[in-house]
Image 1 (cartoon, chains in turn blue, orange, cyan, brown):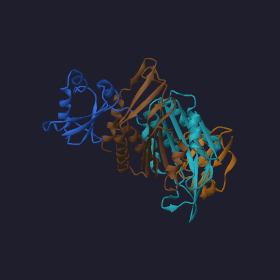
Image 2 (spheres, helix red, strand yellow; image 1 turned 90 degrees about the vertical axis):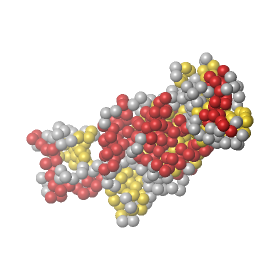
Image 3 (tube, one colour; image 1 turned 60 degrees about the vertical axis):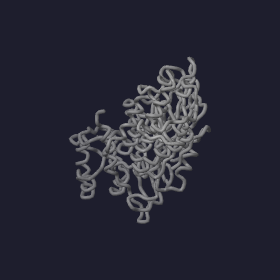
Image 4 (cartoon, one colour; image 1 turned 45 degrees about the horizontal axis):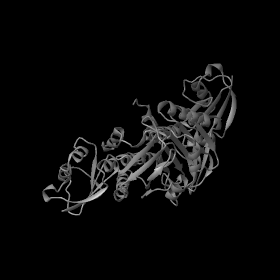
Length: 85
Length: 85
Length: 152
Length: 152
C-alpha cells in the first residue's frame, strides 16, 4: 500500500527529507510497523527514529501513537515535539 | 475627637447622607465604638448598621474591621460590599 | 505598575502597546476585559452607573497590583477601571499582566480581577425596566478571592 | 469559533471588537498574547522562524477550541497564530475567549494555550549569535497540559 510521509523541523533537517511516498508492506500497517520499516533504512534512520528519541507521529492530521493503524493512501507526519504559542 | 464619615451607594441612599463630620467620645475610639455610636441615633440607623447586615468599613481608605482604632482626624467610610469589575 | 480610574473609554491595542513598549523581555501578556451585559440576574439592563470612593480606589488597586507583583514573577501590571454612566457592551475594566512566561501572567491577571471584585470600592447601579437597582455582591466573588489565600 | 493561521500581524482591538460585535450577553473576555522575546535559554535571539504543518494546524486548533467549548460555558473563542519570520517583540499568537462571567473565560483561555503548546504542529527556530537553532519543547508545557486531565 502507498503512504505519504511528511517530516518537519529538526527531523526534516536531520533526515534531509521533507516528503516522500513509500510502498508499505501489508504486515507493517500501523505506526509501529511504519517506524520499523523506516528504521531499517540504516544507521541515521535507526538513530533519529529510535523509541528513546522525542518525536510525534500524526496520521491523517490527527495525533497518533504506535498502535494507530496505517492504511493505503494515508498521510503520516513525523515531527519533533511541537513548540508553537 | 473629630471624625469624617462617608457613606456610599445603597447605604448612602438608605441613610440619606453622603458625608458628615462628627464628634466621637474617646471611649468609642474604634470601628465597633463608632458603629455603636451611630446605631444609637434611632431605628433607621440601628437597622442599617446592624451586625447582621452586609457592609464594609474603611478607615483612612484601608479596609478595616471592628477592632480597627479610630483616631482624631480619621476618615471613616461605610459602604455595601463592593461590586466593581 | 499603572492604575487608572476614568470615565473615558480605553482602546485595548493602544493600552497594550504602551504597556509593553521597548520591553523585549516580555513573552506573555494576559488580559481581561469586563463588559456591561444587557441582562443580569434575570432582568434586562439598559445601562449602568458606576460609583466609587475616589480617595480609596487608587490606593486599593495599587495595593492589589503590588501584592500580585510580590507573589508572581511578572514584569508589570495595568489596571484601568471606568466610572460613571455605561451602556450594554461598553468596556468596564481592563487588567493586563506582562511576564516572561504565560502561567504567571494568567495567574496574576485572575488574582487581580478576583481581588478587585471584592476589595476595590466600586458599586454598580443598573437601570432596568423595574427602575434603578443596586447590584448585590456575589458570594461566588468572595469564594474566588478566598482561594488565593491557600498556600501553593 | 474562529481559527486563523497567517503570516500577517494582527491588531488586538480590531480582533476583539469583531469577536464581540453585536453580542451584549458577553460580560468577560480573557485574552492571551504570546510575544517573541529577545532572549531564550540563555542566548540572545535576533529573530524567529515559525514552521507549521498546514494541513494539520487548522484541524488541531479547531479541535482544541471545540474541546474548550464543550468543557466550559463560553460563547466563543478566537485563535490567531502567526507563521514565518518574526522579530523580538512581534506578536506570535492571540487566544481570546468570551463568556458571561470571568472564571470560565480565564480557564478556557489558559486551557487553549496549554493544549496549543503541546498539540498544535508549530515549530520555532531561533536566530542566535551561535547560529540558527530549533527550540526544544519544554517539559513544563507537558505538565501544564496534563493538569487539565484531572477531573474537576
